Image 1: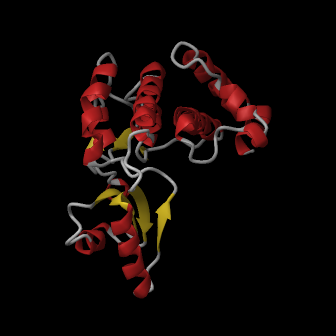
Image 2 (image 1 turned 60 degrees about the vertical axis):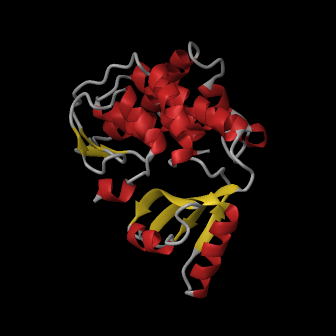
Length: 253
């Protein structure tokens, strides 16, 4: 609903949606504008249906960069940017490290690979969000190393785990006994884990033509946890983005 209101009333937002929609027509065969303006009863932007993963992620990317245009119109200019997981493509565009065609290509190719791979994720795999730090999570996983890995360090007290559902459920029960929150997430347990390693080479091949450059705004990486210098966000980088733990909290810090 926020996106629909902005589309109706904010020209920079509407112009960016239109530009992305036009560029996507050569890559996607569906319309960002139509998805954004669709009635909620038939919207494909919510829920966890893997078949809609590309639509969800590409539209989220477009919303993010369109919002950046709105903020600039209001006089808000970033000194630095950071993006979570696929959100790094939006951050890369806003920073100037990738132009719009390359950033959009990253999101489309990445989401298509993930959508296809998700069909083959074992049914006994899952993801869980737990209210502990990354260091506490590492201690928590002792004895579970062959069953569960850390997928994302989201904040000093919020970590995402991925692995066998039975092990995740056991870990959540042990945390709740200590009055620490944890819950299973309604997504497959594969993202940002070694399970994604077979897709790395495919994504790098699909993105071999992108041309990163030196941006005008500093960008901090959730792959390395540090600042990215000009030209680093090439095909190899996005392969790492797909496989490695999301170090969002260290990047923000």
